[in-house]
Amino acid sequence: MNHVNILKRALNITVNYRVLWIFGILLALTASGGGGGNGGGSGSSSGNPSSNNGSFPSFNGTNPFEHFPNFNITPEITNIIIAIAIGLGCLIVILAVVGTFVRYISETAVIRMVDQHEKTGEKLTFWQGLRLGWSRAAWRMFLMNLLTGISFLLAFIIAASVAALPLLAWLTKNTPLEVLGTVISVGLLLLVFFATILVALALSLVMLLAQRACALEDLGVIDSLRRGFVIAKAHLVDLILMGAILFGISLLWGLVMIFVSLAFLVAAAIVAGLPALLVGALVATFTQGVTPWIVAGLVAAPIFLIAISIPLALINGWKMIFSSTAWTLSYREVLALDQTKQNGDQPAAPAELAAPAAA
Image (cartoon, rainbow, N blue to C red; front, side):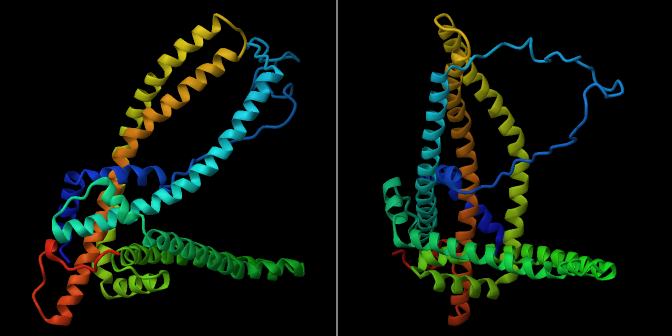
């Protein structure tokens, strides 16, 4: 497998096949890209504020927040806030369901559009790509991810539960057995942890190939998984190297995106803050209390979300299109290599690689 040529071709398609950008934005907005908020609750304090040994100022029974503005929230405003919260909750549920459909349709469309572009050189329109994505393959890809996700989670829970069984030694009230059980359990849990990482990496590789088998060969859920496993086993070294290269590119991309995101964050805050302050000041001439702040927040929130989401979604969409294209081209190449071994012919050029027709 020529990894360099595949990456160059993937970059070329990402830059020049601009219809894919729309599906990339949809993927960036709907795919679970992960982001975990770190939170560090450090240092809890307890005790009487007067017994602080001079470390903190004593307020001598006075309210330290008494000089802050007194926001009197009326029952009407409370009801409005509750109604908004309920409405937002329902909206989030609806968006989650719609986002799931959009994600798998977009993934299927990107895979099939890239494959067809490699076979014919044709660049499809958005609606043609949408028709390719709106298919049984998208539904099967969803079921495949759901099946593997549930199976992986159950296997992890069972393995972790078995590893924790030696902790039952604590019920014996025997100190040597308690220590031995703890040591064994910790060792087994560490083993389960590392095994989980390895299985997750292997499963992610199989899933990338199985998705393309599903989209391009119109296979069912189990057959796609079997196909992905067979291809991964036959071309393990080449595919692991491709995964490592794309992982390195992803890390570099993430470092760059830290600074890009900060720049967009500042710009979005300015764009959203100015009209919000203007509207808040205007409302403050008619009413007092917390109402101007609520109105200003309602004005700023959608503007800020739009100003920060669209450019970041486009940039992240480019990354997702590039990664998906690279894996689709890799899939096509390993199919061509397998066909070459069977026929004893010379390898075909990447643009001429045969692939099963899309359903």
